[in-house]
Length: 384
Image (cartoon, rainbow, N blue to C red; front, side, top):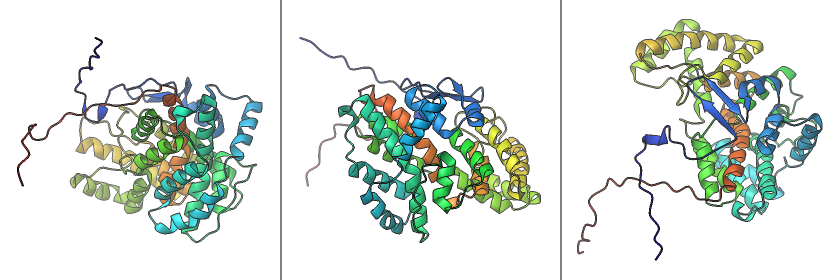
């Protein structure tokens, strides 16, 4: 008689901190070194030298594209940017319900997946999974821009096949020819935020994929995880803090009051990095190139806040993370504050999709255990 031995349950740190739950070739974060990469390439170097579409191709195909391959890939993506007619027709209704573009994106992505007949990844070939993943990532910026415009009483703007990445997104938001300096700044931000280890939304996408569900279900779940302020909601809150500070002479008073109240200083500290966030390092240079009063305030405030945090919470390395300068980049290039996190989603959906494809190839379900801490069982059921 064959018997199956159940694996012994293991106690792990809260939040699975430091626990390896899967293998990945998408990328990695080395927090002690202040370094992260996509495939074999330094992510910050990719942000300095390549485009979103280059990195998207890398995560889909496992290599950087040639010029000809990039052109072909851009043509493929351009053909997938328009929502299904039923989804396009529903965008005003979704936007009118309220909750913002990120909440609307959950609904619109789910509807797009249903309208286009996405099937469970368990039943698809690798090429079919890739097709679905690229299609949903391609339409995401169009959905975000359309939802925001509808919520503000504006007509949607169709994507232009000659504009890619950040340029195409800014065009769909405002309908004006994008400024090349703003495009390049936003492009670098988008490259830097495509993937970042097994964060909450990425892990959510992989758990859902492990059930064999369709790509849309995984991406909708990831957007839900991203909606939490401890994950994707920090950039707008960082800008709120800069607004509250107003001028450099108010930094100590404003930040000191938040610290005295035991509150988090949004835009500082990171769950993984124990040194400077490399994304923040690059974006600091990006905003300096952009220039302006907001940039000057952000740079001055960063330096002083690091000192205030060191005095208030000694022993903890609390430096600026990506959200601090992301807020400045997004505001300066013309992205509305309520679109900060949805804009983050337009790049992170590429990373989620890469993880979905990787997890789908594993063909086993992620099924951890929990420690029961309730009343002793079995307890007799009392009579009525």
